[in-house]
Length: 105
Image (cartoon, rainbow, N blue to C red; front, side, top):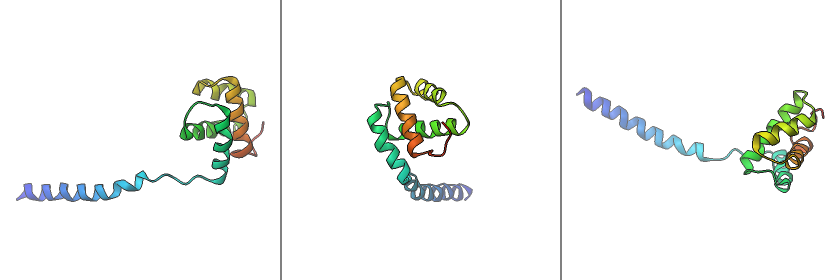
């Protein structure tokens, strides 16, 4: 008797879990600023896909807002993602011009 109840519970959990899974497959819509940043960042030659570009851009903004000088942000982002100084500089400037316009630097 208890075995049937436990099996029924697992079956119900599997059905509920299977119906909830597709919600995680949908992407989060990008903001206009994020789209503008990606359009600019694609031309920088910075390594990575869109997700990596957005993460690197957000990191650059965080560092700029925290008061890091632009040169230090370029070095940090370039070193972390294996980008050249020119690629990192272009990405940081793209982020500063779109994602974090009010950041110092």
